[in-house]
Amino acid sequence: MTTTMAHRPHAPRRQLLLLGTACALLASTALAQPAAGEFPDKPIRVVVTFPPGGSADGVVRMLVPRMNEKLGQQVVVDNRPGAGGNVGLALVAKAPADGYTLGVGAAGALSANTSLYPQMPFDPLKDFKPVGMLAAIPFVIVGHPSVAARTQRELIALAKEKPASLSIGHGGNGTAMHLSAALFSQMAGIKLVEVPYRGSGPAALDALAGQIPLAVVDLPSSLQQIKAGKLVAFAVTSPARLPMLPEVPTVAEAGLPGYDSTGWFGVVAPAGTPAPVVARLNAEINAALADEQNKASMRNLGVEPSPGTPEAFAAYIRTETKKWAKVIQDAHIKLD
Image (cartoon, rainbow, N blue to C red; front, side, top):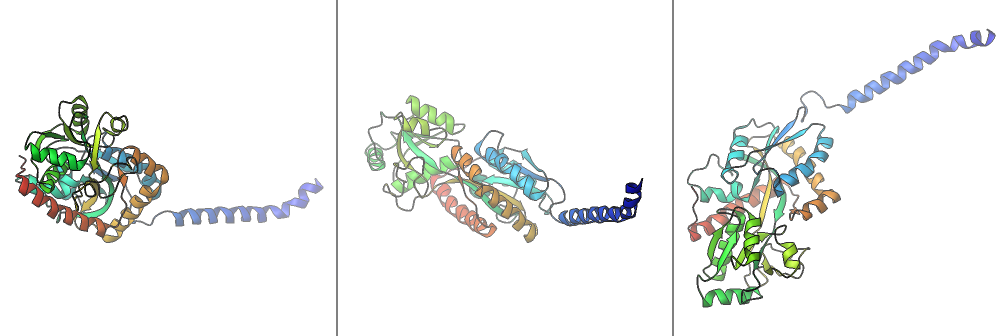
């Protein structure tokens, strides 16, 4: 009884201390939460202009968990393929310019399609605010071992000796692989018969089987066969050699200086999206791209992480648009 009475005077003090601690915790929690109207305060929709399972879709879904964590909101992937990316990006162009609807477009929809399609549902240079590049996709010019050439110079000499005798497969009309083949022919001064396929995989398989002598394909569909000696790798289309094929020269260093044809895709927002929103999205995208595990996983998909500023991405889109317009015009390529 004495002990109980002796501690009673301290009870109110202890309650006050507990109350003070609780108030402090509540205050810190309130400070940690975003203020009303602060971006983002609701889920963000990302329209991916490719079907599920492709490299672009895979990269976006790879980056989403880290972005969810850092942005404090859910990033929802919405696949809208079709018309070389035009279908999905048309939705983005018409969306409110508030940062809650983004698009993932590739070299086609954001640069080449303006020269390929007679009508476009948007203007890539006017209707979007570039947020940031995601990845570059290098290609490889490969051939069946029966082709009487082992180097790019020998291949070009063979094609000049017998014009239009060699066919080259690619991943589909208007794709970056198609344009890579067209640019190669133009710069080499040769005539190759271009054969469209529905993707890089089928083109690589037909080259492997000897159904076509040459193909422009991506790494995932060809790397294993190149390493096994079942496909001859003449050159890579990127401006630098690839870590996974260090022995294979670039097209430029193998005899065509200035050649550079790399597939790519990046994030855009509707024109008019506030600069602070774009900057926040760009920072989180670049942080996700810098994650070592993400970088390794992306390279396993055959793509190279390509972080950068919105301004650099905007300048790149303008450069690519001008570059491919000339290639497409000279090659007389048109799509319906």
